[in-house]
Length: 174
Image 1 (cartoon, rainbow, N blue to C red):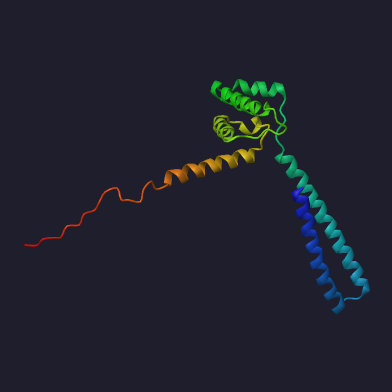
Image 2 (cartoon, rainbow, N blue to C red; image 1 turned 30 degrees about the vertical axis):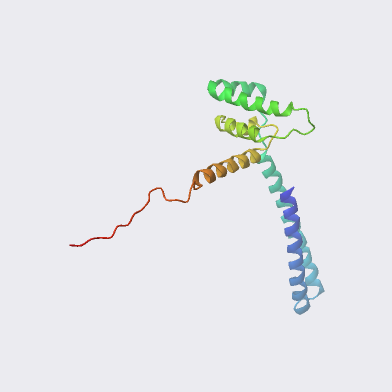
């Protein structure tokens, strides 16, 4: 939908610019017959650009859509994964079920839930397919926030006093 609204905005801006340039050009140099031909050419160009944007939008949507694998293909692919990967994916799915079982209309993720989901997603290769209640971008955002907090705390100065006192003694020359 974003691509379509961007396309419409660009098309409107382009149409305004063309109209201004066209009116100046027509007033100075062209007659009505040439203006009619130019208007048809520009309209066909606009239709062509619109159809190209729609084609691009539909293909981008199709290319970025997650894969819908069947149960048989999923089971066969699981045969080639290690036990630790399967256990981690199972734990990731269980954590999401724990969040969903809370007796509220829209269950929220606590800080602990976020940390657990981020840590479990690190252990699962196909973590994007294993997420059902949150978006992958959300999980990545939580990971970045945790990373920032970790380094902020690690880089924090504990005290402003120097660790070793420097004592300057006068240099005695003989």
